[in-house]
Image (cartoon, rainbow, N blue to C red):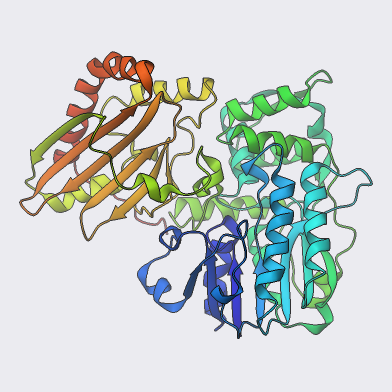
Length: 483
């Protein structure tokens, strides 16, 4: 079957793509930027990629006319705290326009469980998108899920951050709200199970795991699986705004996502029935089993996707292409180079930079800079990286965003997403003579930008000098999967 996969670069899309290929489907990936599709060359050769932004004027000619089914996985919750619902509605209407001229028979939409009369803005938007998609000239199948638990999912990573960092928590009352978590593996099974099923046409199904838990119980059970205890005390005085700041400062989430999550966490999210589970014969995993499966992926360095690599986890929503050309005029630079004795090892070190491996020199200074950025409303250093030794364009890398990553050309280009009085690039390149070039470029914004650069010069001298030397001389880390 020829399937259109929208949101192919998202957390769910990246998990769904290999399963669809494994099942023998012909997949067309719809992405805003072809270079952002974070897959290996073998997978890229097996799919057709189309560049389309569903927020812009629709062009039906972009899509193949022989598409038989589509997955609608477009969400904008973390891109804005005010108008994401308008963006989601516009995307859905444009999607209907674009697929109208194809042979599409079924669209599968992953939404959120809606069982409250008064919905959060997030869940109300999902329901509105569902209503818009029902107006399309195809059969719609809606899967409504609550908390999705898996390595790299925003919900799991927030729970992980809270439990691992805070053994004692003073929490808002929304931690007593009930929810029904579901393992990412089960979500993928449901998504693939309904393809072409006429008994699932024009219907909406709730999907969830076997456990109905409060958020407090989820935090306790996480600690139990990890082998430690935690203490959680609830207080009635924490406002939604304070709750959002609490999540923002303790976890790696962005403030925009924290606001929308807190808004949703006040609503009970429990599946009404398990009808689809009976139709498809799927046995779902418990919450504790989902946590264990997530950690097996993490320990084996097999995390396929992470919410942190989404563009909405940073400051720039799209159009990073304009930053790939590093400016040469009106900028301040710190350029260093070193002759390499082992260029292959140095290239591996470059590809392992950031995250757990760190920045090769003065890691405490990088961490302090990340802390200061977080205090100033930036992304901070907590995003880390998804893969320990793989980098794709568009990936987040601590408080940087990967613009270009080419092992063939031995070049890595990063763009700063921290809050700065200007714009910053960091580039690593190994030339044909095995010389490593490391260049930090800063385009200041007015007088404050220049003052910032000169104030940082003493730190740059030690940090950048130490970094290039250690990249050139250190042995690459070994990230072998744990059996």
